[in-house]
Amino acid sequence: MSQPSQAAVRPNVRVVLFGLMIAMMLAMLDNMIVSTALPRIVNEFGGLDHFTWVVTAYVLGTTVSTPIWGKLGDLYGRKSVFLTSVAIFLVGSALCGMAGSGLLGGPADGMMQLIAFRAVQGLGAGGLMVGVMAIIGDLVPPRERGRYQGMIAGIMAIAMVAGPLVGGFITDHLSWRWAFYVNLPLGGVALALLITTMHLPKYRTEHRIDWLGAGLLSVGITSIVLITTWGGNEYDWGSGQILGLVALAVVSLIAFGFVERRAPEPILPLALFANRNFALISVIGFLLGFAMFGAMNFLPLYQQTVQGASATNSGLLLLPLMFGMLVVSLLVGRAITRTGRYRAYPIIGGVAMIAGMGLLTMLDVGTSKLESSLFMVVLGAGMGFLMQTSMLIAQNSVAQKDLGAASGAATFFRSIGGSFGISLFGAIFANRLADSAAGGAFGGGEGGGMDLEQLKELPAQVRETVLAGLADAVSHVFLWAVLFTVAIPVLAWFIKEIPLRTANETPAPATGEESEPAPVA
Image (cartoon, rainbow, N blue to C red; front, side, top):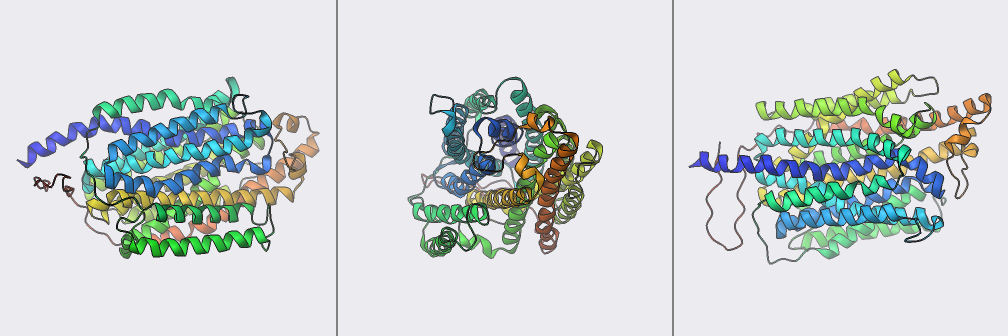
């Protein structure tokens, strides 16, 4: 009887996977689309010193909502929770497209509106990311999960390619606003497909969601991100504002720890961290997000300014990075499914990321496009070894009933790493830029704009000085990224190779009826 059960599941996985791929592409595509549109957005609204917040708000919204979405899926069933997150994401996308357009206020308010609406968009994206991984975890046992998660990682790589390309094309030929509006038809297709094809077990517990824990965690995370963003930039490190945020972060996170120990259904179950593999992979995910999201956002800026690429071409120039990630992700996913072994891959990935970040510290005004492409291939390969492997290890470390919480925690630590990375690297970039000739040329004051056309009109000698300052600021960001990436292979060395389960545990039905045990391969 086990064979029919498995056969009944497999067609469902294939059909649902397509809808999940669209949903994951939504979350990843929009983050990458914005990177090539940012220079135009800043040029229209001003506020160069706030431009990283367009990305930070999205990642921060994703981060604070991820554990909540994961736990809601565990408690109330993943389908309705997942579809709700898609709807919130689409509403946020529509609002982002209307920011500063006159419908919601003038251009003077555009940057602040866009940042706020990006946070709404990020709230929905948090549910997309954790929902996709948890749903695959419901449908596919860990031993086979590597192949499917490899496909999802491949879709993430494709989205990273398509994002800058689509964003660049839209920015050059239409308007940056369509970088957000393009999500609406894609999201409509995903909603229709998932509503009609995705059939998951519906279950519910008597416990309520841990809203107090969720609120304390959100306050703590937001405080830390504000510290890394404003410290040494908007305010002195010893100022009352920064010290007040430090106190707020410490108090809220300590209170969060006490609340989680007593909550019947904690947002982030602290007992999960008693598992060594889960604890290690959570820290690795944090460092991966820190280095990857934090540093990658500066590549399009380097390409459009120092290398003189258009918005569309800057997307094309990111193809080597995504190619390395796509190929390695697919190969690693298949290898894990075939052998059941995974410990070596995060170690190799960490070493490759160190090499890639180290090569990118060599970027300057004389770096050719071929050289920078080779540097990015190395970085992309390292990311490919780590992306889906970290999620697989996290899910294999917990029982099936905690799958949503574990998926949420893994995504959470990667996202919070990205939030901190973007904030800290943005501050490093801004400070380094302010100390160079490029700072004044790009209007470093409040409300300053980044006028790329004006840069082209500068005298040759002045332009070379400005470009050198920009290249130095970008390479300085990658230098800091190396320092954080070094810890990844060191931590991965201590991961224990635990055999991947060949069948999922079946959660007890809400009605209390007996269910047939899951087949064991």
